[in-house]
Image (cartoon, rainbow, N blue to C red; front, side):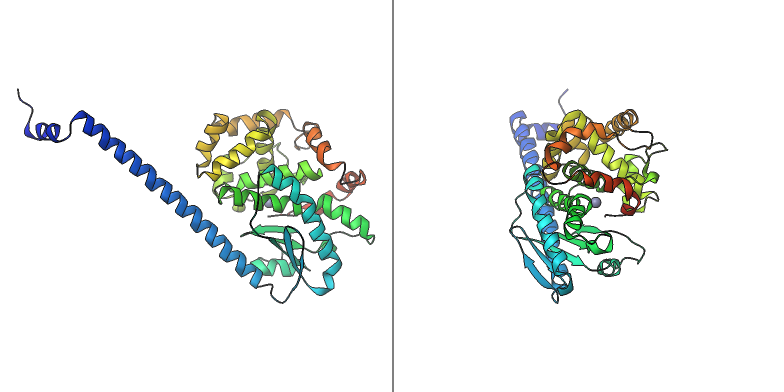
Length: 339
Ligand SMILES: [Zn+2]
């Protein structure tokens, strides 16, 4: 029996070779549209970030300005000494972070120094109860005056404590991740990477007891969907740190940076993870939680011994051993430190 007209006609007009070409055409067209959509998204995100950055900096027009090789800092005249210290610390962390993330920013990075929590919170429209000491947002780093949280008179001691326990390494890492990925990351991921890099460079880690991993944990879905709304922020931060630490310790730091590069190519997080580690987000959740249970101390903190090598390689030349004592005696003052 002869095929019906419809099929016959389509066979006549689209031979197998032509059909393949047509499929190829649609595939290529689809890929091109996807590429254009991606480039458009990256462009729009980048443009929006630069506009917001300009807006943030414009809001600080009455402040003084200090400039270094890679940053410029806005500050009030009475905070001149602290401004110099903040800028010096920012430069100190610039090299290692920029090298780790292969990050080469165009132009200098704005840093704004606020003299009180109220002033910093007001700049974001936050409630007075917020207690961040550093915030990254829209290409700019905002820093709370070290005088607000370091109870020391000796300038050398303040400098050391600000470098070892302040927010500069953490916030600059957020900035590097944001630029390298075009904003394409789950919130928990950038928090985990920022904490990991900070720990590697300074030895600092959050140790609020309520962040202990010895309890029911948030799922990756919870951490991805509404990180800021989770009631136990200390736990959300600790889990983020643990998940990234798992990736570094089991797969190596190169794989973490490869993951960042894949996100920069617009891959969604799950497929970037598949590409780099060969596992999806669900598998990552199962694995990092099992790993964290085996590698934590009785307080639910990831065991420090795991990081000894990376810690030694950077911090010894920068920071005195006295810093370690500082962590022990003032552990509660970091609660809710960063964003
Ligand atoms: Zn952060």
